[in-house]
Length: 117
Image (cartoon, rainbow, N blue to C red; front, side):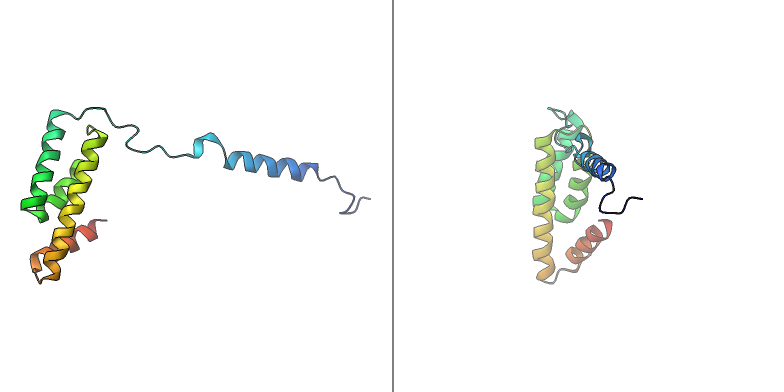
């Protein structure tokens, strides 16, 4: 009868190596959304991205929702998606400054954005 010390450890070694191979396999990496984005935005998506950029300056509460929905579009190029997300961040900064100054509507817009995340 074999004891633990003399038992063949090859099956344990093979099992461990198999698990390590599966964990480091090629299918584990997640593909980024910018890698699958088209090179050019559609005319409609480009127009919406431009509107989100303009709204960030004039109506930040509306820009937060608009830029978020525009950035989620599949027909938006990587550059336009980044610009829409930047517009959303700029609008959120303006809303935060207004909320800190006591603007209740700005605070309500921030709360609505946070509730959607």
